[in-house]
Image (cartoon, rainbow, N blue to C red):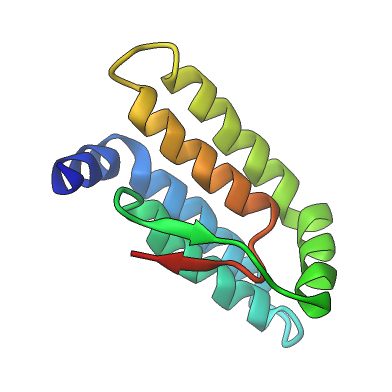
Length: 120
């Protein structure tokens, strides 16, 4: 079931979500200071390609908090709003609910990506 969900996800827009994360990563990697942030974006782009069967564990300390604040102001809020809107649209139908829940998972990750780990 996980394979089928990931396949449908990829074909119907998962690639677009991953492309947004990769574009954000490329923009962050323009400067030397932004490279750690860009590398984090690339990690989450891989999650956006195939999210079914993966969990996100949140944690972190003071450095994660500081990076999350900068991230939220610069990149995180627009990406989180976009993913949340897609999640809401997909949850309007019964078939779209599992896919909408994956978009909500990615939207939450777009708000607080630093200090989180992908398990699965």
